[in-house]
Amino acid sequence: MLVNMKGMLDAANRDHYAIMAVNSVNMEMARAVIEAASEMRSPIILQMGRSQMAKLAHHEDILPMIRNMAERVDVPVCLNLDHGPDFQTEINAIHWGFTNLMIDASSLPFEENVRRTRIIVDMAHAKGISVEAELGHVGQAADGDGRTDDMFTNVAQAVEFVERTGVDALAVAIGTAHGKYPAGYVPKLDFDRLAELKAALRMPLVLHGGSGSGEENIRRAVAGGINKINVCTDAFHAAEVAMKAKWAEDPQTDYLNIMVTAEAAIKAFVKDYIALIGSANRYTFDFADNGSKE
Ligand code: 13P
Image (cartoon, protein in one colour):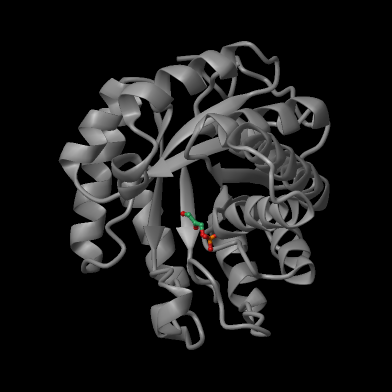
């Protein structure tokens, strides 16, 4: 069933687990992710960013399709706009049927981030849509971001930010970065800061740049209070590895079989990840209190 993100993340916050948010850019990925969640009896979040929608996941095709797939399973499915950069994109996203909006004004000064986030929260909540924002900044692995604490989330600022914006979930910067890290590099996460943020905020926290973090970091992040983990690069990678192996094993294979292989690989990857972050069998929560069907 299609839901917004508030109910599922409030339950995850209360019961100390995390829900996977997978950037899902075509039919095969969306179906793999939803089937994996359904088989694991887990809530799930499918998301896409503006450039992914421009390149491949065209909103007019993929959003009705995902909403339809979501309504055919009985686990909660949220459809999240990832990294909404401006008001126009956010307003479009409301019309297109997203059930959660992320507003990412994290590169802007604090006051401007507050101002923009507050406006999106007021607009989205009026439509029963939940909102995630980001404070501190999760940058790019390719730029070496996340290795020093200069962009990490400040705890006192985070408390003020949440109070003034009314946001439902907060993405925090604690050492991860988006995309592929250099071979062999494992990010060092600031778990002390995460503990301080969780103690001060007591609300759903989000980890961006989940890929390449390593199982140990992910396990500790969930234990420390992360309730949503964004994964894109690792999901693509799972498909790429399987597709290359299929081609190597059978050079005569065709498009249909390659896509079937990719879908199966993503589904297996998502099921393993769900087991890792503790959301298996957490598919019910109190909709009356927490979530709203759109
Ligand atoms: P990765 O590609 O590093 O997993 O990051 C995904 C993400 O955070 C999307 O918002």
